[in-house]
Length: 112
Length: 115
Image (cartoon, rainbow over all chains, first blue to last red; front, side, top):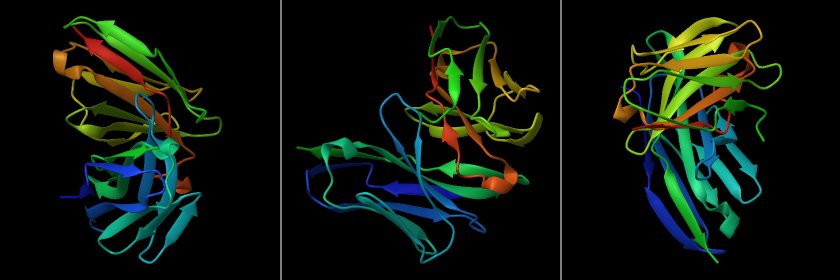
């Protein structure tokens, strides 16, 4: 069964304290791995797409990397406005159709 | 602003009732997706339409149905509502099948409360 597991569930950091979020996946034939940011009560906001192991993408203080079994979202010198829930999703073929399977998310809080 | 619009923003109704949620995709996007997000289940894929036709189904209950109209807007119909249907319902859109399934752009959501 295709699964996405994110860890930790919640993470509190001080402003400027760098860290990484993990997304482990089991999927037959990965077609893409996606990172989204979600603020409370709002829709997820697309961040990155990664397609193959070794690929990296960067945007401001965020960098996403991909291996054959997991992805990391590295946050460098975070600011309070980076506080949000970060969702990871994989594209999987389920019952003959391509679908996104989301993890439960990591709730990130950056304290000033 | 993702360019995806959803109405209404909030909906409060009673058990057994039926409601309709509406979504307008980004200009040019042919695919529309519906998701349900609750505290215990996370973000769950319900159904996808592409240019008016159903393309994929997820964990959608038989009491729920959707359609995509010729102008590409979509509606999600929820009937015989139960307390457990209370959740955030998101619509997302993407360019299309060839454009990358995963680069979906989400609307602001409809918060449904069933009393």
